[in-house]
Length: 157
Image (cartoon, rainbow, N blue to C red; front, side, top):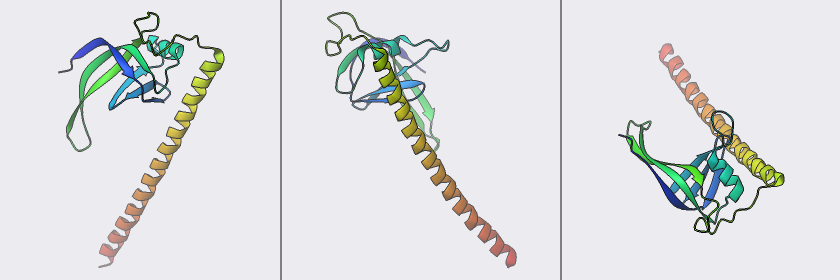
């Protein structure tokens, strides 16, 4: 059974990761994520807050987070339970909120910087993915050659 709880949460950001669809904030062992765009193509409230606050590692922020208990079955058939932590929006205006995260307007240059960092991160991740894929293909080709040699040997007996 999946239980969903929504609450205001302090997030101490240790690392920021991104791809084309979402941003992940690592806080200790926990990971919080936010979607960049809604299905209609407009920015999410969480992403607007992320840009406005210029969220970065080493700072703390307050956000409304949806916690959802989920599970999946891994490749070994084991059921893995985990907590999904989706950031709905950041608290940006009140003096009681995110005192370590000043509200600073985002200039076009800042947005450009954020976008270029997202592109660089995606390029690095893509290159890593291609290398893993190529290594796996090489491994499978080697295994195939061994199996073909064994089949040929069996046929020759």
